[in-house]
Length: 376
Ligand SMILES: Cc1ncc(COP(=O)(O)O)c(C=O)c1O
Image 1 (cartoon, rainbow, N blue to C red):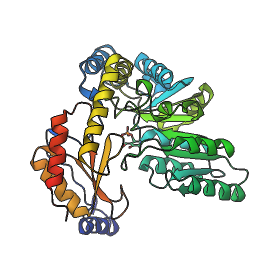
Image 2 (cartoon, protein in one colour):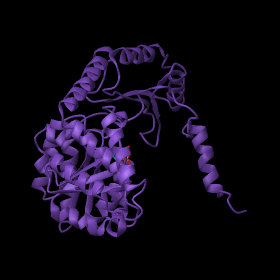
Image 3 (cartoon, rainbow, N blue to C red):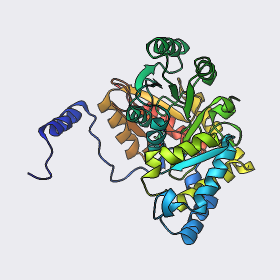
Image 4 (cartoon, protein in one colour):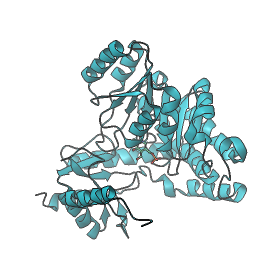
């Protein structure tokens, strides 16, 4: 019968239901959100929303075509210039989403004769980009120098001629820990590899003008390809890479997720450009200070907390995690219930995102309610 699923697909659903990993979209979410990635509250900042409205009036609601055809607007070029300046690179290129960015760029850098070295718990888009490239995929333990060095040494023996692309997340999306960049940079230099750093969650949050973790650690110049999204701290949507002019020109000509899709909406570009301007202003400093205040407050109230805005609360059981999320939702607090396969089996968790827009009273209230939930 047309439109019906295969037995295999149906079986997958049965397994998901049995394991407590079946997903559905909530009809409504609680009004106080600790579940999104708007770490500075810029998605509703008046300057940012005004910039988007202006761009809609000037350029229309959609880009109407791919960039290299009729879709390139001054909003794209303006944002790319601002992103390159922010990251201290020669050039930048925007994509329709952060997810599509590594799917486009990783296959431009490596192929079947090469190797991608990836953190074992890396984001799905980094895995998918690596797989799409056809390169051999080797995993290493995040923040383990020993594990990475071992992988590099054994890879050099197995594949001495191939290029190596090292890929890491600067602030981990689910564990909330920062990467130890110094040894990543040192080893990539020693082994002649490239380093692609996904700063999806660190951009806006740390570094001078919120330019990210590499900028914070003073090693931005050692990163070959800076990757980020416009959909988190920048309050908009889209993804980007920043790198040398030569590398960006290569992506512009070869990255399939850039070439073969309608360009991102000009309004999203204008919003992100204005968000960058806010980040670089005194207000940007104030927003980062507010976020930091909330992170420190959370840490003072909750043991085993992280240094950044992403605070995992590991409950292990899928069912308990969903119950905790539903319980908090019934109290008007939204947190994310994260289950496998997004995180490893047995590590289901609530993912709490702190933002500059939260008041100290709101953070306190969340922690009090978390403490009251009986984690069987
Ligand atoms: C580490 C990381 N990289 C990339 C992405 C994808 O970005 P986007 O949401 O813009 O598609 C995400 C989104 O969750 C992420 O967490």
